[in-house]
Amino acid sequence: HATMEPMNCTASVGEGHCTLWVGVQTLEFVRYTVANLLGLEPGNVTLNLTFLGGGFGRRGADDFVIHAVLASRAVGWPCATK
Image (cartoon, helix red, strand yellow):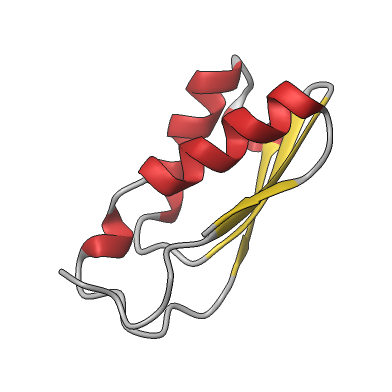
């Protein structure tokens, strides 16, 4: 399950909403995971899907998304993980 590119996500957490720029295979799973993590309604999580390159199953996990979301919430501005 090795990807051909770095696992990356940019998250911007604001008051009552979260915006993500990420390439994942499980959009709704990520939306509900982030909504639960932040105490938001799923409709308040916006996903901007980027190209996957080669996901090969690894892009089905959400750990790299959670890292970006937690970092953005902590510092108060958009953060990216690689």
